[in-house]
Image (cartoon, rainbow, N blue to C red):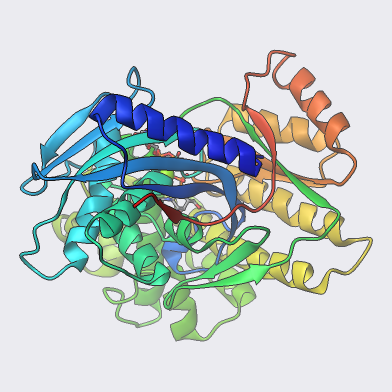
Length: 448
Ligand code: ADP
Ligand code: NG1
Ligand code: MG
């Protein structure tokens, strides 16, 4: 974890590098952290609360306004993220082929949409430095989008509340092509040092969650990268859930076109989570639903069904495992509530065991019902459990990336040694495993 001296050095380094690249000092630095989600996976886009904390790893941008009406982007890792330049307006973000600078453009587009129509954005020169492992479920993408939007507001000298900015960034990141919820942008912008947060949606709210004082969270990367916007995995799950929600709504004589999220369905039925799970069990057969069967159940043509439920990424999807996906969603939403209640109650001896059990149950649900894990992640979670974790689970969207484990204070050394020896066969790459505490949210360091 970076101390103040280390942070100051990083800020001085990027300022120097910016000067080398653009021949002037930056006007300000913008910072937005990645996050680790402790529990509540793939339920934010169904409207349910989630429980992440910010990392102390972030995306840092050095920024200066320019008078050339251009957006000039560069990275401290030019071999991976090549320079990019475009005018301040007139571009589109193409879905399905995400390039790094398009996440930056998402943030800029979000800002542009919030300003009065016809506003001409200030040109900017930007140097980006990232510490969040990319494509690994720690939300490097949203850190980049949020940092970009924050920087753009600052460059145009417009202020905006953090909640508004979080909502705007969640919408803006969808231009990259993933139908995400709002967890990542909310925690990156609303985090406070030392606090995990329960994030509620509609309206957006971040409530402090005090983690047990004897708890330590460890993040480890299984080293399989997955870019969510370059694949259909993520949007496929969104579609499968929506089809399931629509089928239940239709069978309950509700207007399924209006009820798009699992939480909205629960609210309109006024059911408990347990009743929802029972309803899912009674409504669906185990086998996947085909398009002809789903369209028939909803009383629409197959063409209309495709139009309503599929997008650029999912147009070739033919089957929907709605039963399994909704079983995950409703059970995971319950686990978030239980996790928060335990943290709130801090019941003593059994607290870490109970939290760990919920985390491992969440992993099993992600693995078996949501099918968003992979062999390497399952192996990593298995090694973490055998190395003394109270619980461990994949974090973020999955299909690769990171797992998070809960261990007791004082056990750090033994745990890290065991995981490094067994999972990484003693060849653990720098940064693949780290202890983490809740970091602070996005901020601007003005140098003007
Ligand atoms: P994550 O789980 O990290 O959010 P995503 O699949 O959502 O993964 O998106 C990650 C993408 O964000 C990367 O493929 C890359 O395009 C971009 N990105 C992440 N970190 C950086 C960085 N430091 N500099 C430039 N682009 C980055
Ligand atoms: P990552 O893994 O950071 O790309 C994604 C979504 C979240 C959430 C999680 C799964 C975006 C920007 N992020 O995160 O909204 O749905 O997966 O819980 O779409
Ligand atoms: Mg992401």
